[in-house]
Length: 285
Ligand code: IPD
Ligand code: CA
Ligand code: CA
Image (cartoon, rainbow, N blue to C red; front, side, top):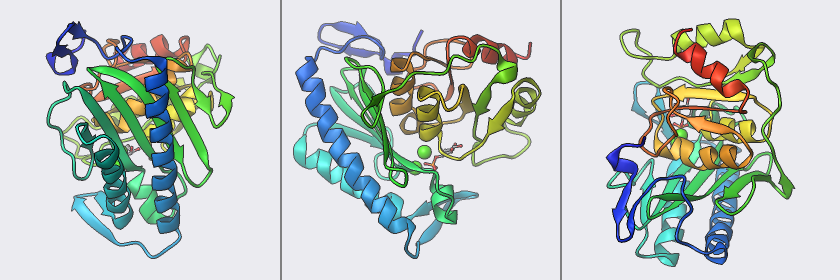
């Protein structure tokens, strides 16, 4: 069950994130085209910034922010504000959470993989999801260096550029390539994922920590990875990728096996065979 935060209590009753929205396919496709155009342009901003001198500041501890995060987000916000002035935006740099339960909500990570970007490690993306009356309507994840756009809507299957994508068919975790990430605060007294990392390292064929949760999810959808888990993430890291994994035939839950919601801060996303095996390892069995 989701928490009250992710249920839209509006006219017509309560709905959960994964139900069909009261929008036609044509309406959804028009939002999709808008989102795709926007991430292509924002990705262009990141690509250009990646090859130039970068202005880098510390947000806190290990957490960085670059000028590209800010320029990309300002661009995306201005596009949404101009095209849909009554829509709300939940975004990392300037749009901290107000309420999830609003009529129309764009969930935006203008640069997922900031640490990679700052160091010149070529693995980062723009991630945009759209939520209407509490329903996750579409997700778009764009990797501007590889020019790969991963996307799905409630009405579609999942796609990478023009091709349909599916989760992998690996059925035993001993043969699985998994991915994860770590919170910026890795102090030993906090929950830091190192325990799960050790347990998964014994169980799986390999683990990758590439540094962009949204792209990790997109890679699960494309069958490049068999599963992904992480904790202490924010909605903008996961929302688009979660829908893309689901529509590629994957399973997306929190660590307890409940359906993933916008208020979940942890995620397990994998093909249907690997997913229960991942939950068992997380539960310590
Ligand atoms: C981070 C990335 C990383 C994950 C961190 C996130 P950011 O997002 O997704 O892979 O491990 O937890 O905060 O800060 O690069 O947008
Ligand atoms: Ca992020
Ligand atoms: Ca970010």
